[in-house]
Image (spheres, rainbow, N blue to C red):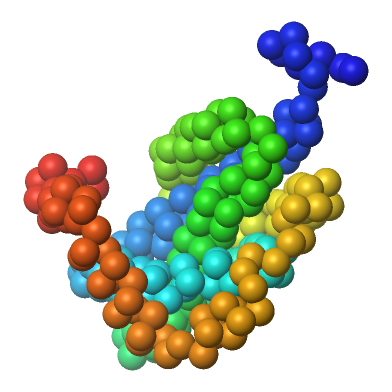
Length: 278
């Protein structure tokens, strides 16, 4: 048997972990760059107003706050490969459409009504796009990785910690890379908007295929990922629930959890000057 770094047999997880890391990096880097780019470029479109940037950030966060319990429930029932592919392509469609609309604002700078219509269009695609991003992250980190490491429990901590490191690294690498490109390539507002949209769209075009390939390689090499998540009876019961019932049940479970007060107290920090975004 081949030997791993610790002198033991080289495991299945060791070979597949690189594909998992690549999937996480490709996804997280692109998503962080996109999340940073849209509000920043709004400042070039509406140079004399912060309202679009504030509205965009508020509505995206509010939608995530309200709808993630509903979206998260599909992680428990939807087929793993179908769900991952849906999140990848759904995220990319949202990026292409939102950046395309933002690019088009450079041609209608003098028409305020049309600019606001484009803003609403961007918002309409960014909300589901952000939900797709969150669902994909949960599916990969909280479902795929635990299933992959069922026979190697010691590998779960290693994979989880490294995926977290990749995500945190991309949190500053993505925005930093975008800002540097914009600084050197953009002169006036129109140029910055066009280059900024081009950079985000170009990155997603180049990475969507490698990301899908990595996901497929992991799925085919791990037969356990093809197994059903729950019994057919449980799935039917889950599917028959109303979306608002799912939302209520999710928040009800959260409020009754022993860690609710500690968790809620921590979230309140984001409404103060202690917020990382301040």
